[in-house]
Image 1 (cartoon, rainbow, N blue to C red):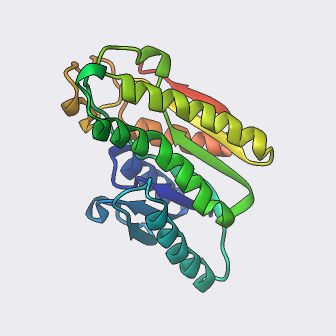
Image 2: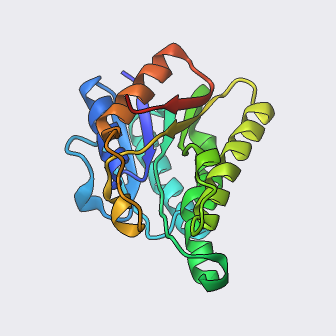
Length: 219
C-alpha cells in the first residue's frame, strides 16, 4: 500500500484519482476547497480556499505533519496536483483578478504545493501535475489558461532536473468530460476522456515509473 497526497481532491479528476488509488489499497490524504466532494474512503482531509496562498498551505502542511507523526512517520509516495480553473476572455477584456485566478489555480498552486509538502516526500516520490495539450490551447480567450498550462510543463521539467531521484510527470489529457466545458464558449468534442480514464492512467504510470509528459488522447 502506498500513500498519495491529492491536491484538488474536490475536482472531477481528483475525485476519480482518489477512487482509483483507494481501490488499489492506497492511503489517500486529500486537500481541496469543497471537502464534501471528496471521495469516500480518504483517510485524511484538509480544506484550503486558495492553493496559491502560502500561509494557508503551510497550515495544511503542519496539519498533515501531525497526522503523519500520529501514524509513525509515514511519507508521501505520490503527489497528484489536480487543481484547475479556466476562463475564456480576450486579453483586452480580462481584468487582472481573472488572470491571477487562472494562473494561481493552474501554476502557482503547483509550486506552492510542491514547496510546502516536499519535506514529507519519500526518497523517490512520483509527482503528477494535471496539465493539458498546451500547444492546442493557443486560441482567442485562452491566454491565461494556455500560459499557465505551458508554464506548468516547464516548471515540472525544472523540478525533475533539480531532483533527479524524483519521478515527475505532467499528465496532458485531451478533452475530458468535466464541468470545465460550462465555463467556456466551446462545444465539448464528440470524443472525450472520462475522469476515470485519466485516474487509471496515472495509477498505471506510477507503477511503470513513467516520467515526463503523459499525453492522453481520446479514441
